[in-house]
Every structure is written in C-alpha cells, then in structure tokens.
Length: 394
Image (cartoon, rainbow, N blue to C red; front, side, top):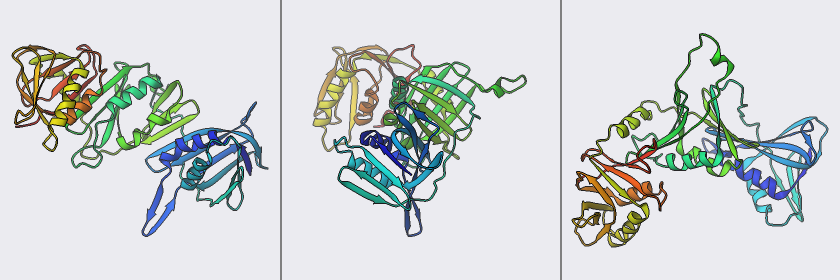
C-alpha cells in the first residue's frame, strides 16, 4: 500500500491525534503504541480519497481524517499499524514549509518520503480501538466556540496529583431543564458553567414504559479533557453520552473519553449547586475585574517572598482596601459595597485565577457571607454560572 498526501494536512492530522499516542510500560520494556491508518477506495471524492488516523492510550481515543491525493493498493480496504510516536515526530519534522507532497508506503515496514528525505520506521501491533456504536444514551449539538468557552472556564480547577481531590471535571446532561453543564474544583477554587441545549434521546428511550432519566452525570479526568481545546476545530460539536465513555465530534474529527471511576470520592455536584444557592450573601460587591486585578498586580510585587494572602477590609471613603498582613502595602479598589461586609482573607493567586473567568471590562458581583463560606462570584445575579473562592483562615 502506498499513498501521497499534502504534507501540512497530514502533519495536522497527526498533531490532532498525538495526545492519545502513548507508550506501554511492562516490567523493563517500553513499547510505543501504534497508530491505525485506515484507507478505503469506497470513499472516493473529487479531490481524492479519505483516510482516517486513530490513536488510543487507554483513557482517550482520537480519530482524525486526512485527504489522500493518490492511493495505490490492491485491497478495497486497508489498515496499517505504525509506531505512533515515531510517525507523529517524523511527519511534524517534515512539515517544514516545503510544500512538496509526502508519500507513505507500507510493506514490511513504513517508508516516508518527502523531497530529498526518506525515513524508515517500524510497524506496530494492532491497537485496541473502540468503534462508536448507536447505543448512545443522549445526544446534543453545541456551537464549538461556546462549548470550548464552557470547557475553559468550568474545566480548569482540578488538581490531578492531590490527595482527596477528584482530579476530574464533572459533566452534566440535564434533560429536565435542557442544560449542558460542567463543574470542577480543587477545594480552593470552584467553577460551574453551562448553556441551554436541545437534547435528542434514542428511540429505545422514547418507547412506552421506558424509564425517563432526568440527568446523566459523568466524571472525566481533567488532564485528558483539556486536549479538546486544540482538537475541535469545526463550527459545531456533536456530544453524545454513552454508558462508558463520552463522544465529541466536530467535522471529521472524533474524540472519545473513558468515564472515570471516582470510587469513594465522587464529584458532589448537588452539593456544589446547594452551596451556591444557599449562600447567605450578607454583602454584595460590584466591581470591574480589571480594577481588582490592577491592585493584585501591585500587591503581588509588594508581597514577594511572603504568603500570598491579601487582607480585604471596607474602606471608610468607599471601596475596599487590599493590604498585606504587615500593612506594608495598601491599595484601594473602587467598587460598590452593599449590605453587612465582613473582613476577609483570600489567597491572591487563587483569587486572580477565578477573576480570569470574567470579562475584565464588565462589572461583576462578589457575594460575601459568613467566615465559613467561600466568596461567590457571578457576572450577573440572575445567571446560573458561578465561581467560588475559599476564604483563608487567620
């Protein structure tokens, strides 16, 4: 089998699936996992043929299509299993701005040619591949930009290496209210974001007498899920929930993530929502994030080498005073303070990360309550989206 492709397009395909190209370690041996390249003469289009590259590392599986300009093979369908890391590294190195076509020939090994370069890499073992089926539980389609915004804001607060933390992102399909939502927390910061969607159920769920679930909750390893920010490039993204994995499809690219077994430490989404809804909101601060961030910039410089705890009190002339513990720095944030404000201490680094979820030029609301409550942040009081930052003890 031999095919010719445009070098930059094939390199882009390899770049997309590379996050799921892993290595298997058994005893003292390290084996590179294979990439499966699938070619078929049945998918002939005006420009050539459609090929598919697939990689799977045990936690996620990535599919990406590529255009074949010329295809030579005796079979109608052909699968090649090639050493994944070497294939990705070589095609990336050959994508050097030279628009000469790239050819790949598979026999006893794999030979890649471009211009005056020829590289021989080994074939690999047939990888485990999970074929998407029709037994999905619920499906929806979202604008890709909106989905990635939710992923960025809601899926960033986790600590995969910490004890007692889930290290995962919680994804909720709320059919009862027509919402798709995500939430994550590392115990110091928490985010919850979502959007209204239209859900589609399989025919089996519509049959008379079948149980209608109101929601599906999933946990996915946060470190795995974040690769979607560079994988999804189409205008819309189709999202399907299966029993054991989640499926995301944008144009010809598909990402599948295995559901995380949380064991005795599941993500308490109901508790997260109750925490926000039950917040006492003793006082409300209305401020521009840029004003707060400007004060934190100076605070961080003045507080070098010390604990990043910022002491916040109500200023007599209006606004809030941000200071270091020893009062070697004081800065006033112009804002409107309503209700009974209680002095508080925040970790400036964590506070900054939470503020980064908001438009810097748009006023936001910060709700402060009792000392045992975190501060609740919202860009509008009526929105369901929120962030929580934990207060520090003296």
